[in-house]
Length: 540
Image 1 (cartoon, one colour):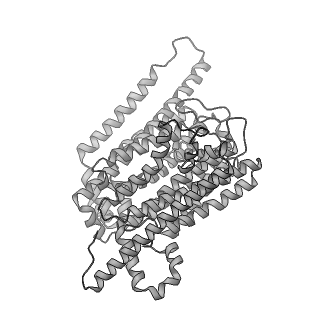
Image 2: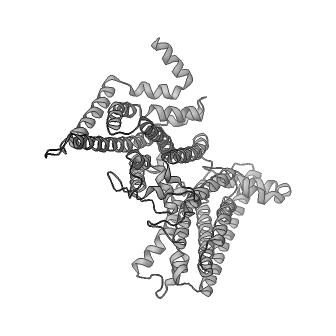
Image 3: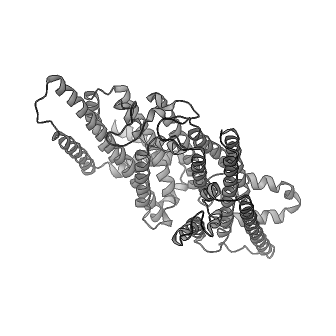
């Protein structure tokens, strides 16, 4: 019977069977279970010392124990959340990096199993001992929750969101693990550390009626105020400070009024972004030389991104803390900068792809010149700069509508327009720099592209700050040429200075594009000459 079950499992998902056979050893299972039980008992006994010494009435004793069990429930939930997501991410990244270094990953790519089978096998198989350790906490978790007067439906909703969050973070970990060779074995610590830092940020961030409220949807602890029925006042209880969560809105809809609406939108958020990570993983796993996303996929992803960032920005001011329109608008610009840095990395082809594309255009110039724009917008191997510009347009149109409809002074609207235009041109400049770096002949061109773009973003504001050149001071206009020109535009910039900065940025962008076109033409001509000479061009 057991052998039949194993055979069926192997036929259904060979990768999962491979992972389970390597991990489900008696000694490993015993260690995982002992660690889980010891951890739970230590947690329980650490709370037991808080029993009040003074005499209480029977009713007071009952209420005290109810609050006490509720606090233990939240503590155990927090422990499970961080243990599962952080340790699980570490295990998956380390495992994929190990596969890459051993060379077995390329063998798996050539096997008949689908990418979905590989992905599911890794997700279910690699952290299997962690899953067993977490499963042992369920009876205690249920007991503490029910004893704390938390309903079974609420407890189940937490576990459903925790499972959805695992799918998101673990899928992101697998995608990150595909680039393991870049970090020489350090990627597992880097990736799991990033997950830990992100969860801390998402959990500690209060609801403040800005686009930053979107980050709270990525943390299962967003349900804690609803589980303990502390949504009517500023939630400052253990373990986090979420603020007045009832004021949370999405496109002015009262998202925070009901726990059910939080559960539904959180699951939708996790499902949507897990899907996009899966699309990138599928492309990168099957063909490591291709871009992470197709240009068509990037347009849809950008539409999803601006929907969420703008949805949380369009909130009615409340009696609590709320950002004014300019600050909220600049938060949206900052989040969009994060998006486009990712798109630059996801849409910029490597040198070999660009060589193939330019060779194709040189050999078929009479038939493809008319479709150059379409090729740049939709082609798999064409440069990604025009596609990045198209994604910028997808973002710009809703933001322009927001600026026009916002009830603010005309000068504030003009400042927002100026900040938007300058920010978009700087993003195109970063995209052109990245594509030029990816045309280098060195094998480390990806690292060079990443380093140069990061330096172009980080170094200018850092140097200006070190030199005590701040907006409003002499030479403060240099902030207009950084990735963060918003404060200077809002407070100090004149129309003439903004126009000068715009013209200089356009000249820089034009020069980079001219150089990019020149490099592409040279790469195409050299590849074509080598082909006509009867020899293959050297791979770089």
